[in-house]
Amino acid sequence: MSMWLSGVQMVAMNYQTNDTGLLLNQGLFRHYNGSCGYVLKPSIELVPNRAPKRLWLCICCGHRLPKPDGSRSSEVSSPHVLVSLFPGGQVSQTPQVNQDGYHPVFNHEVILEISESPLHILTFEVFDKGRPMARSALNLDAVREGFRWLSLQSPQGHSIPRCGLLVKAHFQSGSRAAKNQSHC
Image (cartoon, rainbow, N blue to C red; front, top):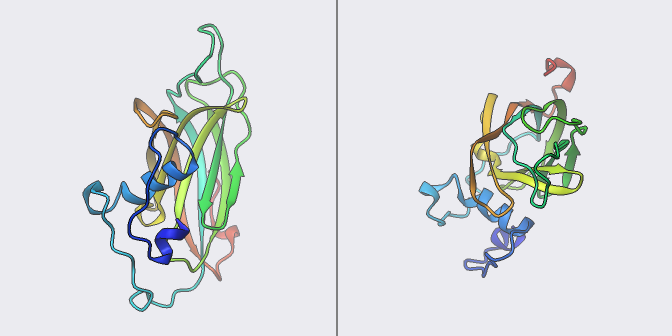
């Protein structure tokens, strides 16, 4: 992501390894320009001088989460969600929901500080005992306030039917404190 912000116009991606770099790339290009992979770099002069913001998120629950690869058929997963904001490396992790991989209720609140960077990627990764279950990434410009359904993909990048997270989002100005926000 730092290369794109620096003006690099073409980058070789390794699509054989589904790592964080590929997840960030998907989050950057999925919502812009019909997912065609071409996005104009925003001009710093065109971006108004905005006050720093915060993003308040509540990860409410998950639905139809898959079992991690290598799981036994009788094994019940105990998922947790890792939420990250790039750049800045802000990370928050939900508590693990024991023995409920089908419809886990997280009710986890997090406040992420939004920097002055013109580009932010928000990632959601679901794990079971350290094993990846599902994930998704999106550009912060694609986040809308209110309750939203976030479809998840497998760790290999394939869509999973009816699998996702219910997330509530709210943007706050830098001067407003988090105490004004209601709970999940």
